[in-house]
Image 1 (cartoon, rainbow, N blue to C red):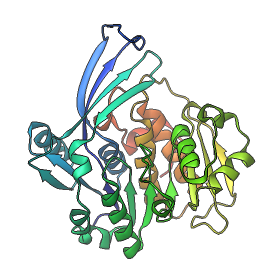
Image 2 (cartoon, one colour; image 1 turned 180 degrees about the horizontal axis):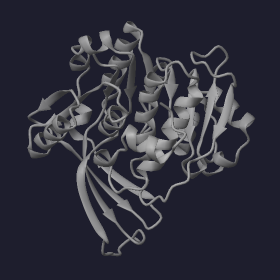
Image 3 (tube, helix red, strand yellow; image 1 turned 120 degrees about the horizontal axis):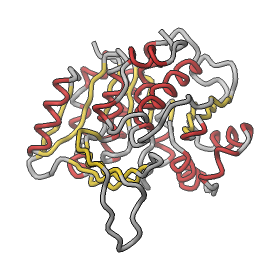
Image 4 (cartoon, helix red, strand yellow; image 1 turned 180 degrees about the vertical axis):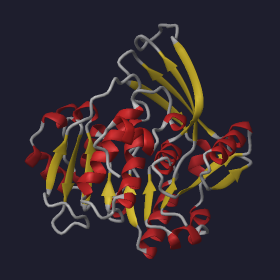
Length: 325
């Protein structure tokens, strides 16, 4: 039985650690290099599964060595996957540069991910029929994403979208199919501009008052918006009569204290852990699931890498003695 389905991207990450980012035309020596499995969808699927919640991943690969390595890694994680293999596309790759403060700069070639076909997603109906929650991102073709949301709607799943990266094709009709979205500050600002014609400075959002953030979130037409604010924690906004059991319409949660060295996969850790916590702690208020996701994301920043270093539930419980469950 699968509780959470993640339809999303796989990307082979190539990560360089630097003392600072180079200037245009400058060559800098890297302090360290790492390559491993990643991609927003796959990272989130691993993060979700490592919280002890039965999960499955649906994605696309090239018929190449990186694609074969992705399949082997998923098998070692015991993560059930439904792969669409493309002979004429390469497995996606990324270049990620991380400075001394742990801030990442990313470049990605999505390749096979954008060839994930809506018909392939629809063909996984058996997964949707038995699941409780669908988790998505925007690193696949938009029609495959839409097909997954429509299939989840048909089967009554809770629908969670991490709108990253924001795409021009992500319209109001797409967001209307979602129950929860988890943008960061930049993605939130882009969505407001794109869908509501409202311009805000992403850098100012963490300093905005709760009432102002709540009003902005309500412009997006999604029942629940979880705005991740990096070192400033996160902000939650619910519409009137939203699906969840929180008493407050909006609130802010502070970040956990950790020794961060690499924030590359923190957003993925948050979204994957949130999906898991919604299922695992279904009897508790939504705030408890967000707090748990905050802890998983914080712990992930103490490690270099993405999918392979996603924290496990036991590690989170051991680190935060007051962790859930």
